[in-house]
Amino acid sequence: MEWITDSIIFLSKLARQHLDVIAMALTAVATAFIGRFIASWGSRWLDRLHAVLRVPVRAVLNLALFGAIFYFVPQWLGHLLSYFNHFTLAPVLLVIIICVGLLSERLGR
Image (cartoon, rainbow, N blue to C red; front, top):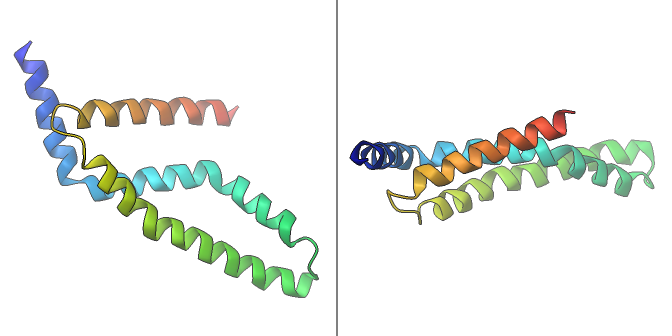
């Protein structure tokens, strides 16, 4: 039973060293899941503009929105994940990975 605890602590310490990369990866996965809904919402909102104006406004809107997401969210997510101690970080990340897999399987159908 001690090896399970040691493994959890080892994996948590390993994950804590790479928390910024993990947060960026989780942000990228969430953006891949939600991005097309955000883009379609923006398209519906911009449909009332003329095509000459719609293309640059849509480009600026997407660049600003997704740029802000990739600039702010990984920092917030990394800060949130840093609150977990060595006994809880690895199990929480494991549950998140399983949920991402289930969600991708569900959205893929």
